Length: 303
Ligand code: HMG
Ligand code: MG
Image (cartoon, rainbow, N blue to C red; front, side, top):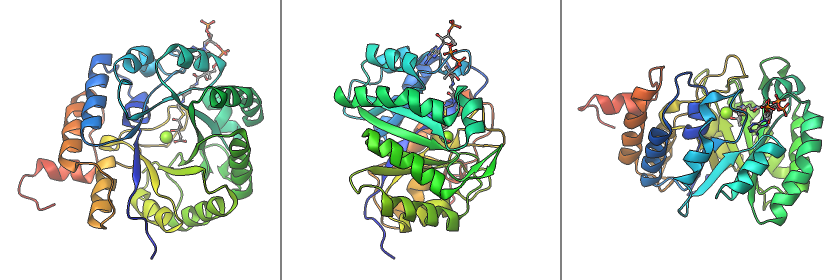
């Protein structure tokens, strides 16, 4: 097997992890969570979203979070859905944007109230403008495997959407199994196809939700297809409010543990990461399911 020696983790807990929580987490505690995550060695992170607070109330404090979290060398990323989101981004100190579009038209309408084509037409000039201004831009490709409304997605449609973003000059694609239904064979096939057709300078990350417990197997499969960047969420938190059936993202601590054991470095200290998970656990309504977190509660279990 040819596996990378180093993998980059893009922590999405403060954004994907918390966006689905009904009970509002105070901004100051989100900020402490983010700082604890950074202390563990995380270098790239989605902090929050400049989306409509009516659609996602939990992200309503995005400006406050950004104000206290972007003064460092971490790649601090904010999700933006439209022109209004970009306006908010430009007024903030943040220099890294993530746009998000579904391969599935139905999902895209439920998530951002536009067809996929309408979203692309709206986003194209915004992306070009941010690139001219020197921003880092990632594009999150939702429902790249399955859609909760339309079922299995066509690989060629995924490739076409990725190529369109690539032509617009984005720096990174984050290709998502939004509802955690993909299997390792499908993951290998899609990432091998993308790696083959897209420019090698384009960063490609894999974003797995762990609804059916297949996310670590899918990470291993993606590694074999040449992927060395993974979106993960501390505590295994996460889920999109507009994707029924989606549970949390694969847990950062489980991913880091697996990679460490395989001799693949991430630069993240597991013990400090677990402290961040412990910190956020009282603020979330569902019990944290990550293996490493649960094991850390049983003192004598060897890790
Ligand atoms: P809309 O209702 O069609 O928006 O929503 P609109 O343009 O008609 O505007 C309606 C109102 O919203 C106006 O305010 C706008 O100013 C305001 P009003 O005049 O009524 O007072 N508005 C905004 N306010 C703040 N920030 C903005 C903004 N835009 C408009 N950016 C909209 C369209 C895109 C806003 C809405 O659908 C939305 O916010 N959607 C976000 C959904 C979301 O956050 N989903 C989760 C993130 S994606 C995800 O989790 C998937 C991912 O993890 C990958 C994977 O797993 O698949 C990335
Ligand atoms: Mg997600």
